[in-house]
Image (cartoon, rainbow, N blue to C red; front, side):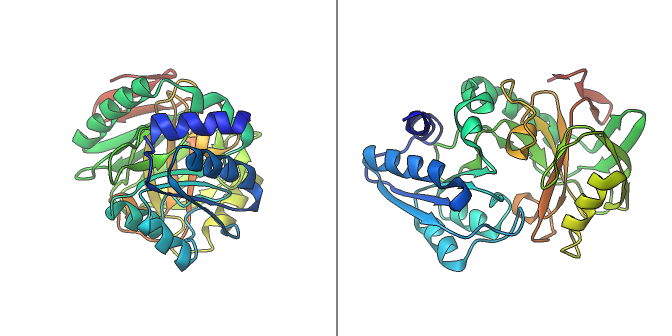
Length: 314
């Protein structure tokens, strides 16, 4: 009943699910209880509900099977509690282009479904996220400073995406829980070093910080065993090491859990992702997308401090 109570709140407040709408839940065996709670709640709200249980994908950014992608494109509302993320896939993009409202929940746990970031005031999250996105939109260069290490990249001409947690209009999509603004840096421009002290998708919560060395827009080196694991996951694709995303967390209820879905939303953090970015303004389709979360960064957009000392300055 707790799961269904959370599902009811999500479907009503974040997605505004209406009676008679075509509602699709996509899940896998490890997230099936959450998927079933969403499906049952959607049916009780009067939607034309369907539940698809697929085999887990190999990594974040892997495409779903073709028949699942077709079902997504035919739905009005799609919710995706899965082990690996469908957020940065062509299937998600095609569904959105056809007007679907899509909420992805990669690696969601039952605890995260009830507690933490999901409980935020999403009116406040939406307002802050849109302000941050506007600042990202107007910037030409981003500089991230972490523990004396500096990473620069061009963001000129790239549009930011506000992932607000509120997807009530046709074609709106993002994560749930949510609270981030992000964009695709210009390919080939990222240069420098980044000290990551939070978590990494596919690796989990870090026991100690790892140093990433980035050259000509690609990850060249990552320190320690966790760094080796990151490189192993990225190197399944020729384009896996591409610097794909710069994001800013805007959810004051988000916690460090070791699950990127929540970690990257923590207020006052930033994340850098590697791999695909073609679904949000970039040019690289890698078949993988992994985020690295930095808990205590300084982020300058041009000469303006936007993130520092755990606060977002917009």
